[in-house]
Length: 89
Image (cartoon, rainbow, N blue to C red):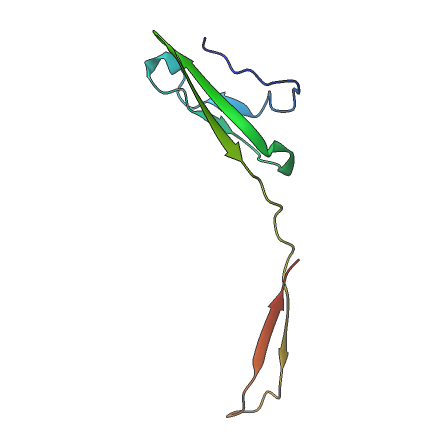
């Protein structure tokens, strides 16, 4: 029907659009801009030409990792061993 149903919330309204300007030309792909953790969920594509075809996609958005903390263990002496460690939440 050439439209996107945003469901119960309108937080997607400004961030979802068809990839092609005319989805009736056999490409009803959508683009989701500025993805957020709250966008995690089940998305459904329903295409109606002569019959109705429905496909569901589960999208899981994970949190961006924090900047890593890095340090070394051991003596910085030529010929000796050093252990480099990094950690990120």
